[in-house]
Image (cartoon, rainbow, N blue to C red; front, side, top):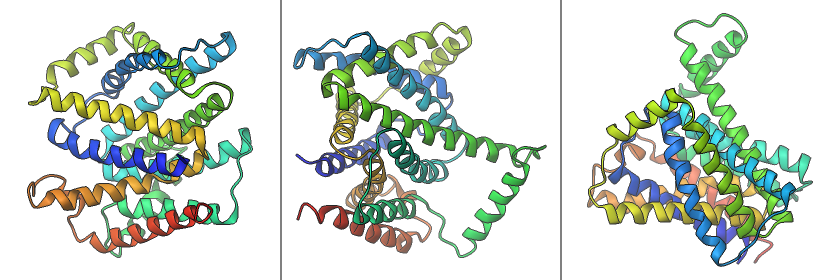
Length: 325
């Protein structure tokens, strides 16, 4: 199976998980530390994979694996901080566009990964398509609003920032930081897969995330946040369905790592637009039976914009499949 098929399958499963989570979970993120904790705590269950491919790294590889896992946990904290400060529709396009760009720069620098002209064209087309699909705003004055806001934040970035702009600056800082850390994590995992067996490198890096979670518990203030989050969390009505969704989320994450081990880090990240495409298709299929679910994804006259995004993502996928065809 080639890296493109694995990556597309991963993003398809992730789109389904996102829709399922709309049924099961609250969208409000109250604490980035608490959310990172509950996501990271599941990492220990990946140990079962070692049954199928037992492997123990030497000390050097072990340190790299554990560091990658801790880095992933740190990335989640910044990611959830950004989501906590704004709507997902503002954060996702920023992180979705910057992660593959950072991955491109880092993989070129540390892994010497190169693109041919078709791949480079597909890379930027996929990023543009993903951004168009993921954002909602379509009014003509949107670009002017963005320019004015970015200009104001940039001018005040290193000076005294007005109270009105401070949340925006924090949003930008956390979004850019999480995008950079996501890229750094994926590039590091690619390096791990180049020198270690896939299952072994993946599982031992998950141990690093679990160890990071345990260190979170050592901070009393963070322990309190985790306890509060547990009390506020809504229990899923269908526990079996909830566990199935979490299992699918884990499978999607494993497939994404497998795609990275097989292909180019930056290109795999650029394919995030495919996930948004699958999400739209799933929403359209479910909208007749569940009209209230994800209605904001296609509301507000954004259909034309999303169609353009879909065309760009399709074109990008076509360029990537040319060598296969």
